[in-house]
Amino acid sequence: DSYFLTVNRALEFEHLLPDATFVDFSSVMWEMRQVKSSLEIACLQVAAEICDRAAAAGFEAARPGVSEREVFVAMTSEAWRSGADNAQVAVVASGPRSGILHAPLGGRTLAEGDILHVEPVPFVHGYTSRMMRPKSIGAPTDQQRRTAETMVRIQDEQFPAMKPGADAKEVDRIVREGMLSAQMRDNYTNITGYTLGLKHPPRTTDFTRVFRASSDWKLQENQVFHMYTWADGMAFSETIVVTPEGGKRLTRMERKLFY
Image (cartoon, rainbow, N blue to C red):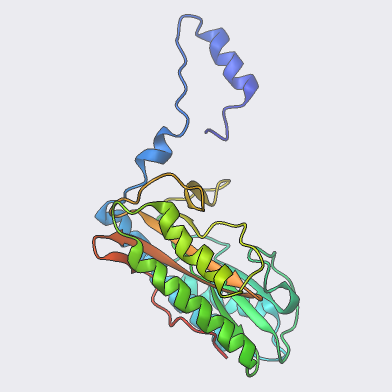
């Protein structure tokens, strides 16, 4: 799992240590870090609160005639003031790019009728929380309102199922089948959530545990996940910790299509 133990370096180790025995240590550390301590959850809680404030700052700045970069600056400034440690603290995309969840930063100017997608990704002591929200630039259409409300309702049914011992595929099914049954999407090929915790480049996302139809693992108390869904250029996501009462939101921003 090392990013720095190249083939050449590994061969050199074997050459210099002919009597040593090398064993596979892949995935061991990733598995050990699944259940979070109270201190780790505290870091993730602070990061989640920064998500809320950064998204609010971005939406406050977002209006017709403002560029995506100005929204990004507003989010970054608020995240840094609030204690974020990292430089790249958010994803911002608008208009035809709003459905690209990991779009690179652009310079597009916001216009009436656009959907703005934001995802704050602040780090606190190396721990990252995440959240996605959409904002309509100008009044949204009735269809956009209905789509957003349906996505929120379906995902709100998923979070209570996130209890210790729950089958990951059953948790996934709530959103996957719910979105397809509601005709929010023609197909659903992506996952509905993945592990959150300590992150450092070059690996900025932890897929040790993911929620998909074929998942074969059970949830554990104090695991933390980024749970998300999207359709029609709008995305909703939360940082969720597994508790005996169900999934608890660490991110607390109102779940709606803003405008």
